[in-house]
Length: 366
Image (cartoon, rainbow, N blue to C red; front, side, top):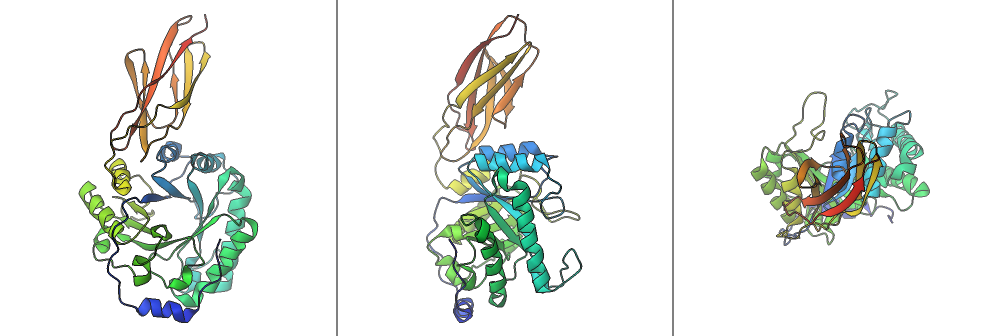
C-alpha cells in the first residue's frame, strides 16, 4: 500500500517551488472527524456519526490519556464497532510528540526520537490488542514532524503497522504542508490544522494543489463561528484540493481540544461538503423489526441509503409522532396489553429531504 520515502532532495525542491494556481474545485468531499469525546459519556454521538455515511469516511477515536483506553473499555469498543460496521474508517490516535524536537516528553520523560518511536509502536500495538477486533482501520499519527529529515522515522512507524495490518491506513498530522517525501509514507496527510481566520490566508504547497487525488489531504479548521464562516471554509478547501475536511465552531480551550463536540451547523456542513443540489430523499429504513414484551416494543432497523447522509429518524405510532432519534432503534413503553399497534419509521437527510415510511404491525401480549 505504501512505499519507502522519496529522496530528500526532491522534497526540498517541492518545498521551494512556487505555489501553483488552484485546481478546479472537485465538488464532492468527505468529512474526516477527530472525535475527541469519550464514548462512555457520549455514546449517542458515535451513533450519530455512523448515520452520516457516506459523507463521513474517517473518524479518529482517542483514549482519555491520548492513547488506547486501558484496561479494555466496552464503550470504546462499541464506538469503534458502530463506526466500522457503518462503513467508516476508524483511526486510533497515536501521539508522536514531534519526536521530541520541540521538547515534548514521552510518558517516561524523554525527548529522544528513539524513545518517541518506541512509545508510538507500543501505542499502536496496544490499540490493536484491545480494540483491533472491534474494527480498527488504521492509525492517526499526531504531532508529526514536518521536515523531511525525520520522514524515515514515520516510514518506520508505517512499516510497523503494515507488518501486522497491511491493509490498514496511516494518517499523519503535521498540521502544516509537508514535503513530497511524505507522499509514499502516509495514505492521508493533515496539511492544515488551525483557526478559521488562519485558513483565510492559507495557500497549500504546489505539490498539494497539483496532486491528482484530493483525498491525500485533510484540512481541520476550528473557530469558525457560524454557518456562513463554515461555508466559506468549505469553499476554500475545495479550491485548496482537500478531499477530507472538518470545520467546527469549537475553540481551543484550556484542558481540551477544539474537537470535542459537534459544530452547531453539522448537517449543513455535510451538505456543503457534498457539493451537490441534494433533492434525493433517503431510502425507507431496511430490516424494520420489532421485539415485543408486555407494555414495551423495541423497534430497530438498518441504516438506509442516502446519496449524502442521513440526519435522523422519525418514529410514528399510528398517526402520532413519537419524536426523532439518531440511533436506528427506538424503545416504546407504556403500551396496553393485548393491543395491536402499527409503527412507522422514516429517515430525513442532512438537506431536509424526507424518505418514505417503513411500517410494522405488532400485538402486545395479553
